[in-house]
Length: 244
Image 1 (cartoon, one colour):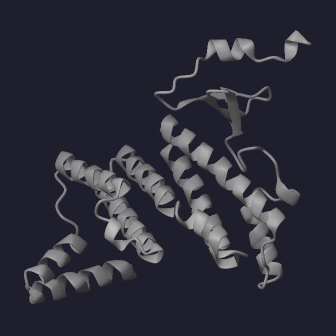
Image 2: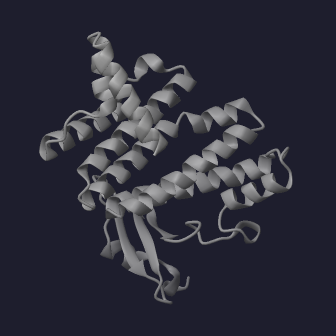
């Protein structure tokens, strides 16, 4: 056995810790940044740009880019079994890198990778050859939205925009609610752990930065207390903001 091929030194130098996500940025031999993720069975290395494994499917940056091009060429494009396997591979890769970005506190990069995954989910939903295959992805949509919402809110805090951070959380909660409705899980929304964690994040932001209730929350309260004139004014203001 060639002693130069084993990874003993690297593994001993960087022990695995099951209590945390062990991740670091390192330089490649050409000076490029790479992400390394320490697992119990070794070290996973990912590229920071393009697809995490550094490959270019048929010359495209990602499978999603390849699929969007195929759709443009043929609007009736359908996924086959081999393509579904490659799509699942890309889902896993972007999940691993998204988790790494969150741990490294590179929040905008985590948002970008979450957006990629959500766009790939949308494509799969629209072109899926099998309902069960679609369901396997859609049941994880709320989790991806949760990661994206966390990252977007924390990025806004870094930019000293607490109001924007709260808005990101509210938008994320709305998206998760929509997903739960689509999946027939409406009765689970209020008690869902991810939802509770986002609500706690929003409440802590509001307390720490003395942020008042949003227009949408004030509108809901006005309707609940039958203050219909106030509700009408708030609804008009929401409409104006959505048009700008």
